[in-house]
Amino acid sequence: MLRITVELLPAQGGPKQVKGIMEIANDGTGSHEVGHYIVKIFKTGTYRTVWKSGTVKNFPRSSKKLGVWDLLYRALKNVVGDRNRGS
Image (cartoon, rainbow, N blue to C red; front, top):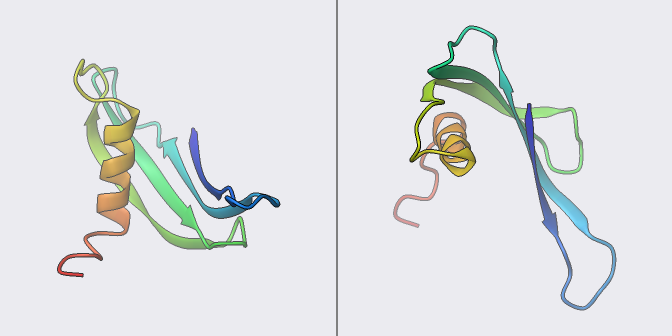
């Protein structure tokens, strides 16, 4: 499982603030070549309360070009979508 934590580190000092957490977990149905993943994004400040969830299917594991950032991108695109178009 991957856990992605977004933290704010205040420029003026002070404690860090967790702004978001996402988990990407293998769902166990893929193969050596492709992975299928369950994605959960948790509400800010309330870890374990799911805000959004979804999946990433057919992610090419054996690709030399794609890596963890590509998996994160697909997870965000599939679960959150294009919320900022035209903003």
